[in-house]
Length: 174
Image (tube, rainbow, N blue to C red; front, side, top):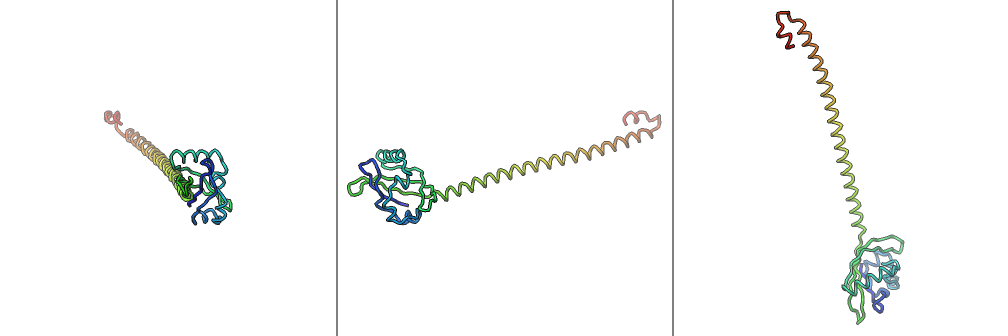
């Protein structure tokens, strides 16, 4: 969306003198309605501090880039990155505002953040499953090995009892 307005005495911004179709469609106002508005009400919500800051930046650097939001005719809020450029129009200082809608970018960032959170949760869930599986395997090994060792001990003891007295060396080993 593009807007042009004059600077009044270098201190305030006048009504829009040029508005493109994108601005008109995006904000749901006719060009005539927009030509009766100015940046103070449409871009800055009548915040004099913000307007003064931008005008000072324009006088010093001839351009300013800032984030702000527009409110459409139906009340929808559109976040935007606004690039403002100071130039002369008919021997008067004027400002060209070029606004880029950030709604899609913010929506994409939100989706990326949600996907990232889901991936973190999935990784945590997989790690918990692995730990549970390891604990289960360790328990099974412990239980089976314990039973087998107990069985072996009983069998060896029985074998040791069947040995004769003259096989003392074997009995001692058993």
